Image (cartoon, rainbow, N blue to C red; front, side, top):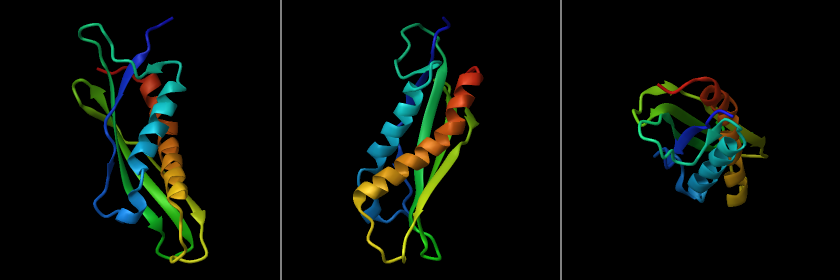
Length: 140
């Protein structure tokens, strides 16, 4: 069996334009979703390699936006990620994801749990292209 490729997940960030009432546990929810996606791969690992000169991937993620859309009909989250080589940090891929659900109006109250679930789903969407990229591409 071939060795698994290491993936380091950097601390996720939240864009400055995201309303503080929606931030909640968003960073933790995003990190957990990314970790789960890596763990579900038979070719990737979160375990730091012990051998000198090992190469892997660095995953950097950001919550770009969360809240009602302009029409006030959908509550949505948008996430962007960067996949870079590790430890060199050369940027290679830029997956993104979004998720949303219908709302009655822009004033509708949305629970923190719904926001956390939404950002987690947006990360899962981004990882649908991120994981295959990291599995198929050799980090150089």
